[in-house]
Image (cartoon, rainbow, N blue to C red; front, side, top):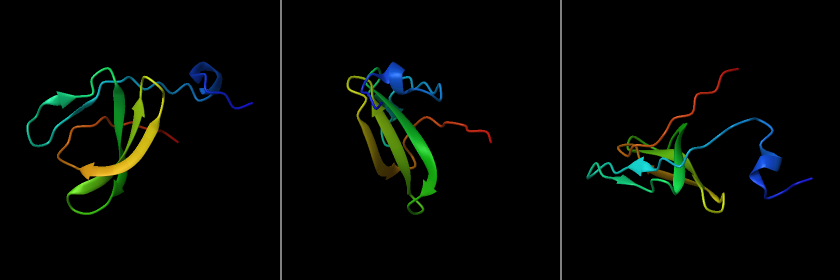
Length: 79
């Protein structure tokens, strides 16, 4: 049964810690404690790539693209 309670949905055991990200232009950190941001292996072009974010407050997810100069987390997956 679908549920918005994270512990009921996490069958894979994946944990995302809301460490935020780093600005590519200033080097400043942002969204610490509020979001977990992850790069995808999919590039949009030379400068941008796809990312996914998960907000810690409401578990809302976002899919978008940003400049690759930003600092986001990377999740390693093994087959």
